Image (cartoon, rainbow over all chains, first blue to last red; front, side, top):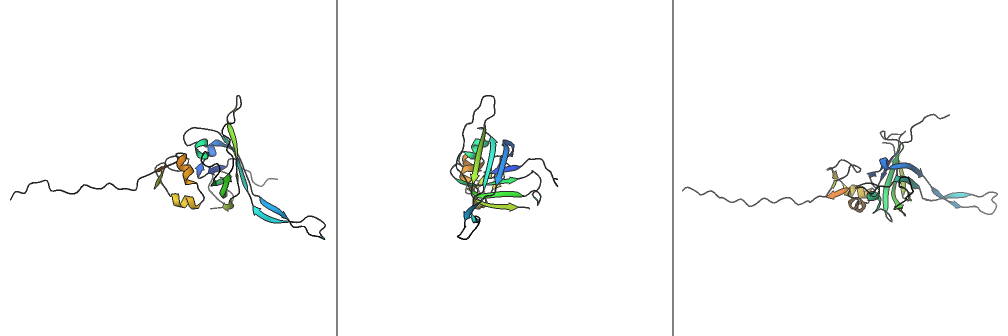
Length: 136
Length: 58
């Protein structure tokens, strides 16, 4: 049984810019690459930790208006930046921590995702960087 | 010196500490390109030299 529940309403900043009201999905995954260290005599595969390679994937409504989605992202593709995500808009605390990827990389930026009768949304993924979490 | 020019970044008109933000991994050039920051001049207006325009009476 769930011991706590909250409405999914994360706060997302990209390069310090708050794009929460343009985001509709955000998934932060902490990834530490595995390195196989299985040796002769082993009866099962053994892994050890390698480099960290966390990712943040965000789905945003595309907007070309002033200081909106496109203005935020256009100069970030191919560069490093810092992104943060917090589960809810409440004060930062142990139950509402801020997760940060510092120095993560934006490889691709979809510019137009047009479909008849649908809003233009884009999926972007930030990869790598240093993961930290703050509770205050 | 930079001032915030979009509410998405903070309170409009507030000073933005670009050096500190850059240390935290923020891409300042992208913020400027996106119109989120406005550079402010650090020059102060120089006052004109004082001149005594009144005629002395003696």
